[in-house]
Image (cartoon, rainbow, N blue to C red; front, side):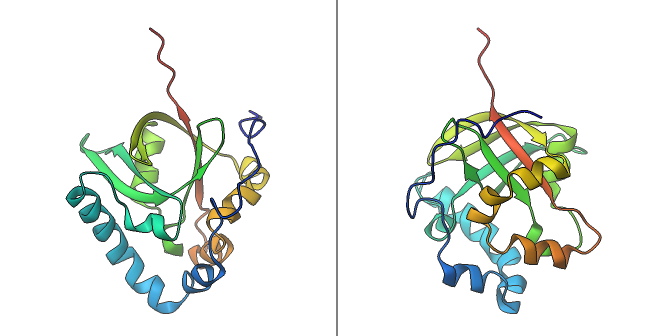
Length: 175
């Protein structure tokens, strides 16, 4: 198993942790109904209007934008999502889809085309996605729960669907 968490520095206080109120709201019926419909639209609009300087989700979660290649269309698709940032410059992302019964399209796109672009804190990073096995996911459970304290609730709501988790590693320039 790759040891991509080995060089992780401790999480600075308040840096990636989610406020307990946000954790409670994240599983409320109202949030589960409205958030999937409003948050992506709001994040993308604010990001576009501020020329990449602001992402509203960053007020409550460590969030960035992931651009994937559509597995059917070949077109680029950009979605906001929360991620756990490792000190060595890689990220964990979980395809919870708010606990809905289907996988989010971006996770299916990563399975077919693992090369993507992550916009994190205003900088674009070329990344390669590694789909983690259930054993690897359990090894990184503390990091996932740091940014998604409602991960278990979403996993329960997803029912038969196993939530996909990806490790996004920066592409090393070979020139």
